[in-house]
Image (cartoon, rainbow, N blue to C red; front, side, top):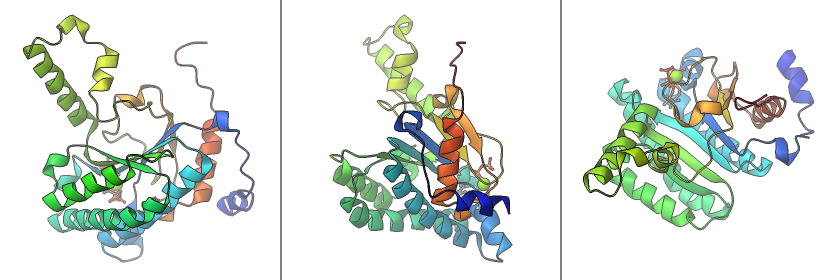
Length: 249
Ligand code: IPE
Ligand code: IPE
Ligand code: MG
């Protein structure tokens, strides 16, 4: 009933642009439970989730979000059954092939974040193509986190900085927050303002742990495959009503 009430009134979206999060990060969670409730295999949930991802991406662009980062596969997700992992990788490939055609018509710039070295050659080729094809787009930046882990990202950043120190290009005392940020997968992008996790779980699950320092968290009790543009509007409204202080008063 409550949801119905909210949905009915969602047609008017009146959040002023300055109250919108510039960077929205989404943990697309709940695909497995969605499928189980329908007596379907988990991969059917991932397929439904992939469709929602496309709808929500376009909706965020329409709302004027500047950067959207979605969590598609974590460094920990390899521990799932091989069949589920290959199902997700297949969906990712299908998405890339479709989006290469589809996003061409859209003004969305795509980047993949995560350790891509563990992905198949076919996938990394498609990723490189998708990034190159959209590199000159001027609209929303879409980051797709694949084989992404916040701790893994920091390990990679530290290794890169370590090599620069070894070469003599950097002194340890020159390491600062900016330098670390410049070595993350998200280098050059603003921190997420809003981290949104549907599915009812109340945790970050290794997502953007450095970048999340001052993000506003919004948790919603909706499984990702059921997530609608109206739900996204509700999250944006919730964010707009927050009072961000960044340690000040
Ligand atoms: C999120 O949905 C998708 C991935 C982690 C790849 P889940 O597969 O985690 O769904 P639940 O949390 O088990 O319902
Ligand atoms: C986080 O969800 C990863 C993605 C959504 C890709 P998980 O389902 O893997 O997280 P946990 O296991 O519930 O913490
Ligand atoms: Mg999950």
